[in-house]
Length: 249
Ligand code: UDP
Image (cartoon, rainbow, N blue to C red; front, side, top):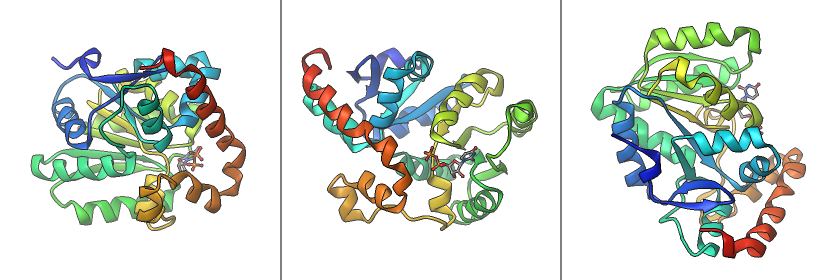
């Protein structure tokens, strides 16, 4: 039986972030994908942690997720300051590819939900080409209102994937998954943000050297200056970690 309570984690302001490296994370999710119980995977960054601290409903979603992985460099840094460091950064984009790779060997079915109609179509084509052993059993764009939720959920249920990747706006993605995960009954459901835009070729990931310098957030800020306001959460997060590090861990 897989229990999130048994996942080695670091506690960041009430959110339990997994300390596993990529390999251990994939091993857990492999078992999860072949189970009959939904697992919500959240790829945490400081902006999300700060959002949770301001919004109890969002906090509850983060706390109830079966797995929260350290996606943001700031989260990795904070775990060190808390004296309970995670093994490595587990970026959502890399995790998506690792799961597709595993799915190749295990003939998994995967459903892709989110992004614009053109992006999701192109992302589905490219992923299918790159991972022919995975069956992409459905895809659909992420621009639909709450009145269409049930129709979307039913379509996914009917396709019965092992994994559902969801890319929607930061503030709707995780709540949408949390709201429907039981109804969906998909064993692994993971929010992947802008990943389909990158896979389709519409946008680029930060160059490797910037990733290594933990500056992926800075690259995104340069590319999308409108993210500036949201990124003010980063220094606030850093100050809060330094001030309260005695209570973290
Ligand atoms: N997106 C979507 N539906 C929406 C809003 C966004 O499918 O209602 C997609 C968008 O096309 C992109 C991804 O969600 O592929 C992440 O969007 P964005 O970068 O705007 O989200 P942010 O993380 O900035 O909130």
